[in-house]
Amino acid sequence: MQGIAFFHVIILTMKKCAIFLAKGFEECEALITVDVLRRAGLTIDMISMEEECQVESSHGVFIVADKLWKEIDVVMYDALILPGGMPGTKHLGENEELTEALLSANAEGKCLCAICAAPSIFGKLGILEGKKYTCFPGFEGDYGAKHLEDKVVKDGSIITAKGMGATIEFASCIVETLVNKEKAEEIIRGIQYH
Image (cartoon, one colour):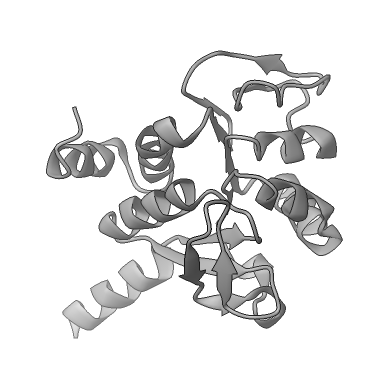
């Protein structure tokens, strides 16, 4: 009986993450993040912003998402993650339902993560105001925020990263935030990333 109670505690405290895939997303930024978070035992759903679960990446790779945007209740997720890539970032930023969900999640202090061009979405929504952030060169803006050249920047509940080459560090930072530093370091060692 005690084991069952412990199991329920684990299930109740497990963080749920969503990563949003729009046509033209950067596939490595999405899939490496999904891989690392799943290694950490986190639940992460790949959400298609298209009419079907199959989504074409910026390099013509077709990925089958777990769920459609219209099927989910976004408030059920503890962390919302945006991959970069073009025109994927543009499509995400133009989706009013998603941008409203990001603003609501930010108001609730949920973990918001974006990589490459996608931090510009946070910037345009005012989510970066007063924060430190990074992004792919050329996507900096007048966001009332301090841009850094670091590969990954965490400021409060906001995590941003510079580009595809920073994806492992980006995903590791998400794991450290949602689980703990020990789990993040264990995964880094396990994948032989030094």
